[in-house]
Amino acid sequence: MNRLISLLASRFRGERFDIDPAIPSGYLLAFATAKLLARLRGILRFGAFPTVFIGKGARLKCTDKIRISGFANFNADCYVDALSRNGVVVGRGFSLGRGASIECTGSLKTLGAGFTAGDNVGIGSSSFLGCAGGISIGSDTILGNLVSMHSENHNFEDADLPIRLQGVSHRGIRVGRNCWIGAKATILDGANIGDHSIVAAGAVVLAGDYEAGSLLAGVPARKIKNLR
Image 1 (spheres, one colour):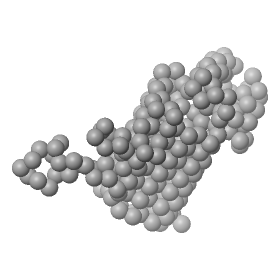
Image 2 (image 1 turned 90 degrees about the vertical axis):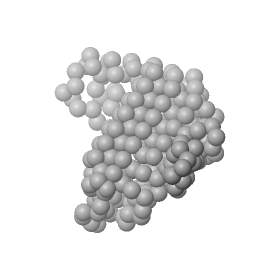
Image 3 (image 1 turned 30 degrees about the horizontal axis):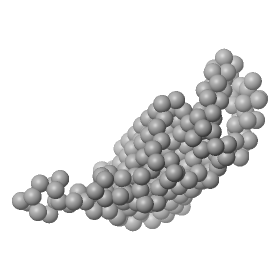
Image 4 (image 1 turned 120 degrees about the vertical axis):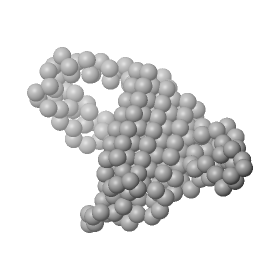
């Protein structure tokens, strides 16, 4: 059982995937059954190709705006609303964690920009990505659990008018290739994080350009180390 699932996982992922031999066969059987059902949901929603797995309770809206290049995993209870100008475009090996959300439009008053991800991008459980202003994530970047990204700001310049009536602004968020965004980090509109960077757990990244190879930490986040 262990070897069979390892071979199947390696084939779907396009890279070697070895399951720990200490994992009980009963657990692996239950895992394989859940994945089989997820694959059937993927076939019903997207057809036989690309290879998509949709977990129990996952909700995908506006699927005609979702484009998937290869193997993709939408885990249980995740939520994707792809309504936007550019939709949701993800590369091979994409994974959206349990209970995570991608919302591409914040209000029907203004159609959002959308979400793009390169190959082998992983988004941790219970993360939230608000993509009204556009979010782009480079290949091989991983996000921890409970990460939030907000590519939209409320205008507040008029002191005599309620903030909710002043409209919003968008600059977009870009995260480069081979980055690691730690658990509970928050990335705000206008942030541009270079390749090979790390954002520490709990950091709040404000608008600005952050050069490649940066270790960012703190509230607000600052570069504390050069990684390259």
